[in-house]
Image (cartoon, rainbow, N blue to C red; front, side):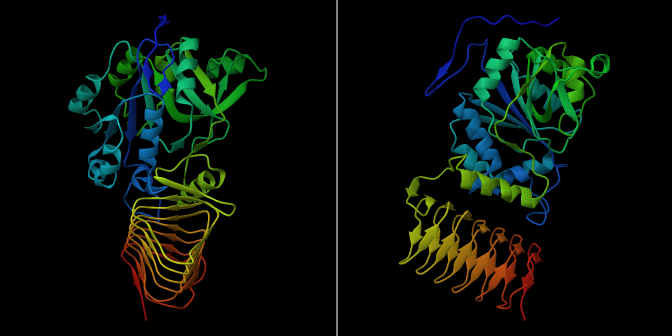
Length: 391
């Protein structure tokens, strides 16, 4: 029976104070190429590597861990995702974190050995298995785990994600097994698995010794078998499990509109009509009108007479030419929008070119697509990657 006793000690990483515990958790993030890409945004790139509030979702997860005082992260991923790291490597290098990438495929003994070398008998593992987006209060989660003296703690959400099977808790926040649920018909607290776990090192090492595919298989059943004391913290902090590209953008829309997350930008402008986050070296022309929350990336050029209605994002190095109107659009880096264009509720991937004056509503334009038409296309039109539409 594993019931750890926690000594009275603390770790301080200004400006955050870690809760009293035996050691700082090792953060482990597993990413699988089998996680479905968010088409039509990308046919291959992992959602964690796609532009998200002008950085990436992975960047904000790592920043969230660092703000909680954690400073060591291991990312476990397969070969195909390792080749995609170029999209986020520079972002992550800017964070004050020690980040190590480990290649792993099935029961790859080299990958397992490298992962085990990071384990410390005094330090639990904070595991995010194929995460999406989470504003969990990590320090509160660590404190909960300490108070419960659990082998494993689950972060549970009131709302279901891709897994709609609820997890039930008893009055002491212990996870109720299927057998116990049948014995006791009284009302129980329930939540949903978020694939975020805090695991004692001996339990986690035992899992690694089993024939278990940690990148792809659901971890919760194996944890419930391996851990004698499993607790669940039901948290109402925002957690989102995106299934589609629309989910991906709706979440960013909500974050900006409700100002639930501070984007990583240097300048913040506020007035009665708008909250605007500006990157570095942004050029704003005369008579630019911005309303609603708007996020503008680095080295963006917005020419005179442009109107932007938020929530909206203009990706780094993009250029919006004169007298254009951008209404609740999500524009990724390196895009070009011709003068006089009117875009509403549009989603533009990287390096998209709208050459002529265009009036488009609800258009999806994937990476490297080009539109040379001035005619209005039906709402919901999708331009696939590298497509060219012209007369």
